[in-house]
Length: 390
Image 1 (cartoon, rainbow, N blue to C red):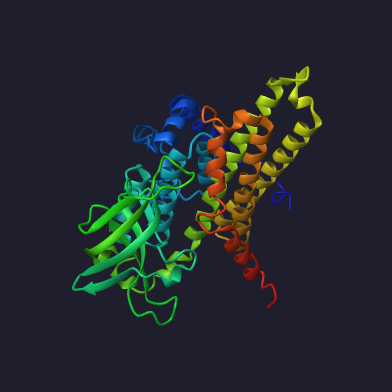
Image 2 (cartoon, rainbow, N blue to C red):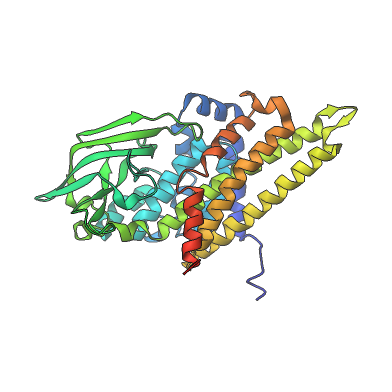
């Protein structure tokens, strides 16, 4: 029981945090983070320097050049980067979570041997090609098709909200590879190289999470080897089971980690401002309304931390965690939107200025309850898994 109640963070995770914080202070100054946001710029040079630290192997087994699967530590790294900029946090997720987790969980031996060492070295990025213009949360109704012709699969259709598709090496494409009968059957996941002929990638503007552009991706008779089906050609029509695995739980956690980082950054800025800003003869931190707002925001942020890392621990132990990851996604992402807004209210008009970081944190946080499975979807998942009304 004493172990179950021990909330001390593992020593190796504390060391990772310290390493990431030093990197952020040296290579990710606030001024550059603002430039990345305003210009929608992916800082490839900074990403490559970060990859050189060995942080990309936290979801890859040692046999393929990684450090072993450590979901808890991965979330800590995402949290620390997101405090400064999602322009680096998102590409990190594209490498370690989209690529590393999905390949580690579902790839064939040949795919693992070819791709996972590149993931661990920071040389491989995946973008998700799941949603479509007519398909949001109901992914099993995808309209993009894949038809087997000889030893190839021919892909036609359109994907929407493909964050980072233009910097990715592969699109993790969910498509229908058979008849529409049986909603969750005849679905396949295909690893489509972004260099493939017949693919068109176009920008899709959006509110927050800038620095890694979101894209529309059109597939027109795109041909890739059938061996590019995730898990190998024998996994044709078995994609739904791959999609609904542990990697899906981790997607909810990675967004929760981004939310926690944004909330912490906004709270820290507002806290410092309240102690330094003098109005009516004293720092505004002495005014009760400000004190109550910051106390509430800090309490919510601490609760977000506990929910995230409890769910991450469960996922890392490979325990059932669908309820806990949905709770974390719901609470952390809604919480980040609220905490960043509270921080702006403390700072006042200066919080609206793009010369400060708060308005960026707010824009980024506002996106999180929608992306990666909306808050309403998480509520449905929680109620369904707990058999409410059954």
